Image (cartoon, rainbow, N blue to C red; front, side, top):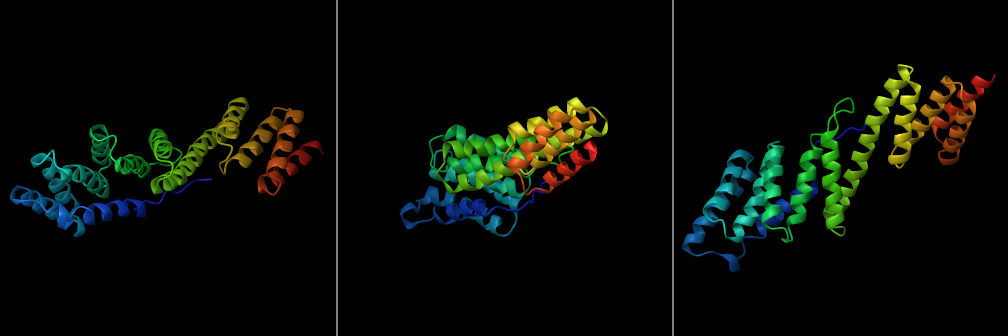
Length: 256
């Protein structure tokens, strides 16, 4: 089963944008002359962002930090810069900006968004299971960090969903390799791959097929007792699965 990853702009990311746009322009924070210049830079960045000129917006947000590095606006701009890089599909730049925010402001209450944006920037680049899955591992680790550090946040709920999807994708990679070994009659190597799915990714959608493929490999090796034992595990845990029906037919045909 191939998991398709849609390149959607998650609502949670937009939530952060809304917060920073409207949460920083209150009258109580209205700066004096020097800071009005700062506000003008920030508002210009917002204007570019709202009109889809993301490169110009990123430049202006970075300019806030360059000219006024010790202001609260600089902290906001750092995250907004990361967000605008993300919108441009400049994921390495987005990750770098978010990581910099975390290193400079680890205790800031908006650090959760930086962690989440890092995971999302990796997630957007997840490739087909036929390719290397290093990026998938990085996305999984990043979202896991969000859930670990901020378990009660809105970001954690979405991160948990992404964790489930990335784990399913990684299981799909193991299945891809296992099927290849099976076609090459490398049955022991195939069994090891499918067993890894069953033990490490047992809550994914690939587990029923993995058990079925193990049965296939055992039958090919003439190990009927092992095949029947694995089929029993499949039947016990996934009695309604189409894979169990296929496994049942496979063993019956072999025994006839």
